[in-house]
Image 1 (cartoon, helix red, strand yellow):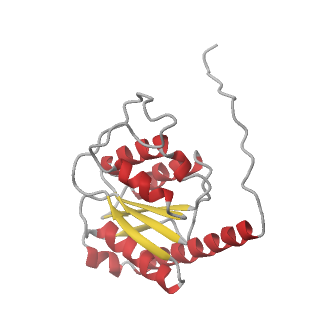
Image 2 (cartoon, rainbow, N blue to C red; image 1 turned 60 degrees about the vertical axis):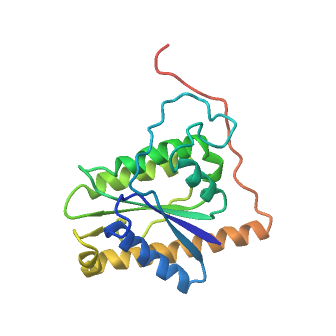
Length: 207
């Protein structure tokens, strides 16, 4: 079992990385492998709705990190997506990457549990947390919760570690993720089939 921890911050070792590291350390104690995958600080294209990815499993634009993210996702069993809060929303870096990765490589994410985490100095956490979760709920992914909303506070990594409840929340995400992964693994071994998905109905509001 492997969890891919996606760092949507342009700062490789900042507050979001610190929160993800707390999850990673706890997963290790639960014998769950994990990897922190940073999106970096180079530009990521927006999706332009060209449709060129349909049936290919990858984005037609191959000059940034998105296809590498999709490739990593194919071998992951669960995900944690992290972002700092910029103007009360996740980073544009993360949103551009997820728009394209989930559209072009949706099958790599479906039915796999995921959690969103956000870090902030002060405000905008709830709205940012909400935005990231929407990728999961349109992709049939079990959402991993914790004992509080998945957020930490601090403007520096050392301040994040002083947020005792936030750190505790990260640890409990790891425990809940490991529990869910092990339940899914047991179900697979017992022959439990994935949910049947109805398709074909697309309703417009203009008639």
